[in-house]
Image 1 (cartoon, rainbow, N blue to C red):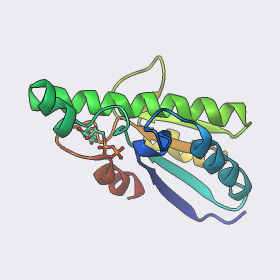
Image 2 (image 1 turned 90 degrees about the horizontal axis):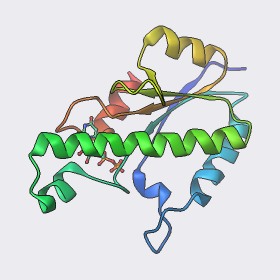
Image 3 (image 1 turned 180 degrees about the vertical axis):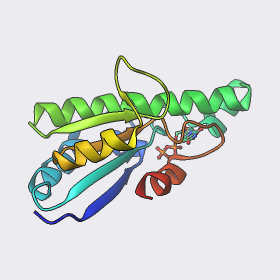
Image 4 (image 1 turned 135 degrees about the horizontal axis):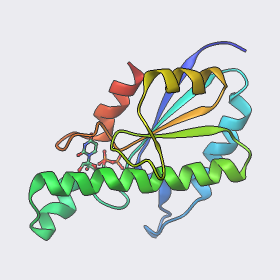
Length: 147
Ligand code: UDP
């Protein structure tokens, strides 16, 4: 086992097929690759939500208060996280779902000790909920979680 830590960012569009409909085939293909590589690397995965909602696009269309719209976008990342975790579980790929927003029924609160423990146990760490703050993107979150 080498201890290289790799952070992947998965845009919400990875959950869509060519017809823009929800589809799990790309996620399953990524899961299969992670399963092979998991023995030699430790993975973190930052999940986007743009397939469901982007605050600055759909929020504007609906005339929402911007901060509310961005929270919907962050909630979208949690939905994708649940989908990924479910697919990983079904493929016997060990992972832990973390969320920057409190959502204890479905994900653990972000906690460095818990993240380190999960990585030590060779589990894939899935980050959802973005940074937990409106007006950011999950690309910013990828940088934050990589650090
Ligand atoms: N978002 C946010 N704060 C964050 C991360 C995301 O407010 O820290 C919101 C923002 O509205 C964004 C949406 O969540 O448009 C979905 O994230 P993103 O657009 O980055 O998803 P992706 O493009 O990767 O699918």
